[in-house]
Image (cartoon, rainbow, N blue to C red; front, side, top):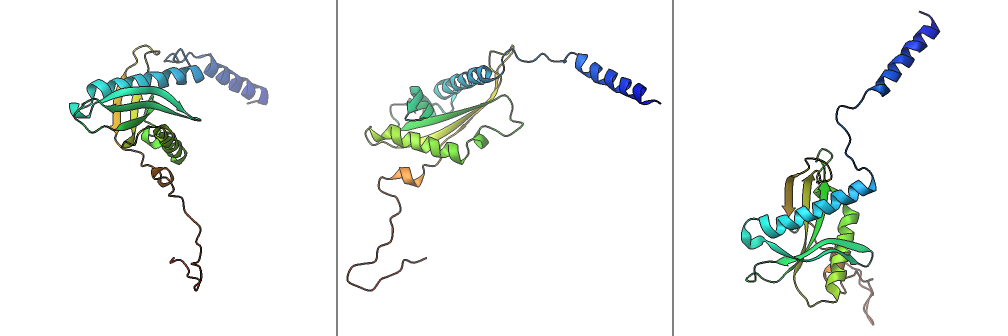
Length: 192
C-alpha cells in the first residue's frame, strides 16, 4: 500500500463522517438565549408547583416577588405561606433548571459561592423589613422548556431550608472579635 493511497482513504473516511446528517435535529435555540428561556421556564414551573401542586396543601406558598434584585444579587422567587393560619414567614427560593440530571442535580449546583450570595441577598432583603423568620429553599426543575417541541417538566423537587443561614448574617454584631487582655491584671490567653 502506498502512502498516497493510505492518505486518500483517510480523507474519504473523514469527509464521510462530516457529510452525515445527525439523527436528532438540535434544539432551535442555543447559547445565552436558550439558557435564559430555559431558566425563565423553570422559574415559572417552580412558582406554579409551589403555589398549586405542593402537597400537603398547608405547605403551599404565595408569591411576593419574582427575580428580586438586592444589591448585586438576585433572588429568583420571594414567597410566603398561602395559608393565613400558618405563622408568617418569608421564603426565598432559588430555582435550578436542568435538561437532564446526568451531570448532577440542581441542588449540587448550589455551591459555597452561591450559598454565600443567597445568604447575603436574604440578609439585605430582610434588613429594611420588620423582623420575621425566613428560610432559603431550592427547587430543582428537570426537563426541557416549551421552546423545544414536546418540552415538559419531567421532575420538580422542592428542598425546604436547603441553605442554612451563614453565621455572619444570622445575628447582627456576631463577627469575631480580637482577644484583648483584661485591664489591670495578668494577661489571660483564650482557651484553644
